[in-house]
Image 1 (spheres, rainbow, N blue to C red):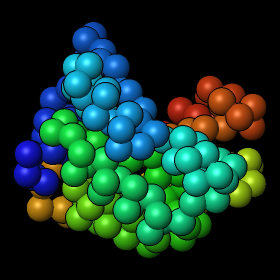
Image 2: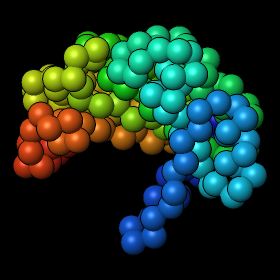
Image 3: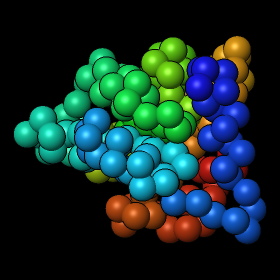
Image 4: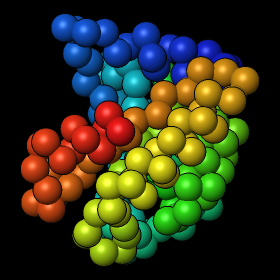
Amino acid sequence: MTDTNRGTAFRALHQKGNPFILANAWDIGSAKMLAALGAEAIATSSAAHAFTLGRPDMGHVTRDEALAHAQDLVAAVNVPVSGDFENGFGDDPDTCAETVKLAYEAGLAGISIEDTALPDAKPYARDKAIERIRAAAAAARALPGDFVLVARADGVMNGQYNLSEAMARLTG
């Protein structure tokens, strides 16, 4: 599967009313096992990757480590791979945009970027969170192939804000 086809294949799995299971792989072995069991796509897990390195989750893996891990999984399977790329590996919107470009170059079909100001569990201010995702989205649109960017509003899950705030962040 070529880089330009990965994003298109991954996007095609996202059908309203027809959900699919996006299995999280810890490593090459689990990625191969999940693909052999019929997974249509694989996702990295920032927590799982950190745990395989003997580290805690939330900001303890570098972008270079996450990219290398993602490349390993992409090379191991013939299904689209999406990356859990925490907060885009930086506070600055330009860093989020660069992370999108590097993730695409690594062969990923897409990534998710959350609004948590790691390593703290507190969310970015709404305006900053929106600015970061706008920069990442612009970078994704500028790529030569399809790439699925997921903006995560993790504050609901982390008890930092309510669903109305999450929707304001995601539609801002």
